[in-house]
Structure formats: structure tokens, C-alpha cells
Length: 122
Image (cartoon, rainbow, N blue to C red):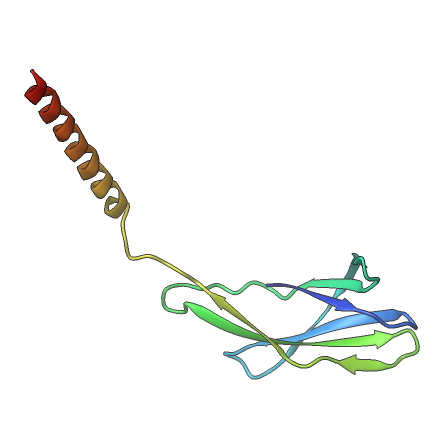
């Protein structure tokens, strides 16, 4: 999961840490975020990849909680509130025949109607 946060401090931002956990665990993990530039308003942009999480039909959703810690150049720390991210795996029980079969039937009906109209005109 990739996250991005915008940070501003007039004294300068020294570091940003994403503290995160999946809803299936009780412990939090820390990931140091990397500076990737500034936006048009002058906020520093920090990004991090918090790892991969595999979803499947038996585990079709996940909830991640993330809080961000920022340290300015004077050694002051600040922490955000908790942000929750929901991730879901959508799957279909349908097979390719569920799409192909109606199309084939529709084309067949149209062809039969065309043949019927041509035959009637003769």
C-alpha cells in the first residue's frame, strides 16, 4: 500500500514517519517516508510503501490504520490523527460464457430477423 502525506513547517521538515497497522494485528510498525518534492502551495510531499497485502475471496477486505509523525529541523515532533484506509478485493462469480452466450443469442436473433425480412420481401 502506497501512502502520501503533505507536510509544512516554517522551520523546515526534518523527517516524516508513517506508523501503521493492519486491523488483523495489534502492533504498529514504523516506516520512514521519503521526500519527493513540493506541491504548488509549498507543502513538502512525503511518500512511503507500507508493504503488500494479499486479498482473496476468503479475505476480501482489509482495514489499515496510519498515523503520521513529523519532526521539524528544531527537533519538535507532531502527530496526526489516525487515518483509516479500506482496501477491497472485488471478484465475480461469472464465467466468460455469461457474457459470450447472450451476445451469440442476440446476434443469432438479429440474423434470423434479417433472413425473415428478406424472405418475406421475395
